[in-house]
Structures are given as C-alpha cells and as structure tokens.
Image 1 (cartoon, helix red, strand yellow):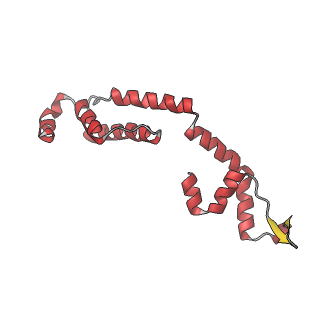
Image 2: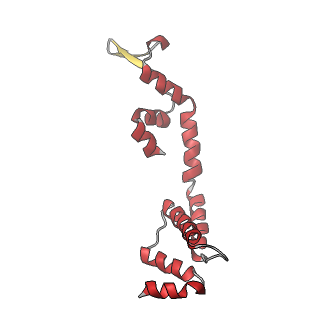
Image 3: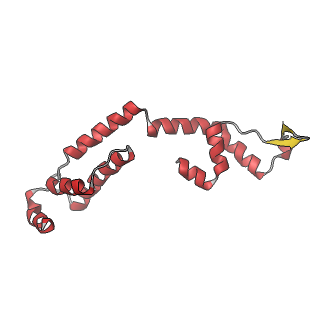
Length: 140
C-alpha cells in the first residue's frame, strides 16, 4: 500500500504519514495559514484526503503488518499447512497447485521462504499414487 500511494502521489503519502495538512503560504519570510479562498487544486486534494487518512493508515498497518507475536503465529499456522500439505480427494492438479501457492505466498509475505528444490519435492511428495508414473518421469 505504501509504495502504491507513494508512486501515485508522494504528497498524498506525506499526508497519510504526517496526519493533518493545513495549507500554508509564506508572507514576508513568515509562514501563515492560507485562507480557504486561496487554496489551489493541490491544497484542496491534500485537505480532502487528510481527515482520517492517518487513522485509516494506522489501522491498515496494524491489521496487515500486525505485531510480531501475531506474525509469528501466522507463520506457524502457514508452516504447519505447508508441512501437512497433501492432495485432497478428487482435487485437480490446478487446485493442488493453487492451494500450495497460496500457502507459499502467505509465508513469503511474512518473511518465511523455502528453497525451490524443497518446494518441488514437497509438492511431488504430496501427490497420491495415481501420479507415480508422472513423478518418475519428472524425477529422471
């Protein structure tokens, strides 16, 4: 989110992180607050975004970045999903791969990664006996 906002308009990002924006101007080397009828398009845009931007950002950050304890808990749950990963009954290969990718992406977002060789081995070992001939072909 941070990079998205910064990329689109860095001034907006400054409002999000610095709370309220009050349009100001310099008069005789002194900074004074602009009257509302002096606001330009940039001032209007900045003011319209600032009412709750900082509060919203803080809530989003807390929700998605979480505390270290919550992050560790999420990693533990996803790592358990990874370790116990197996093909489900009547599951197609695309569904297997999508489910596996969701787990790997979740772990990666939280800073936990596995080597490609390890992930390939894990997914191949998760398949049932019906895939044995195809796995043997891949292995050689």
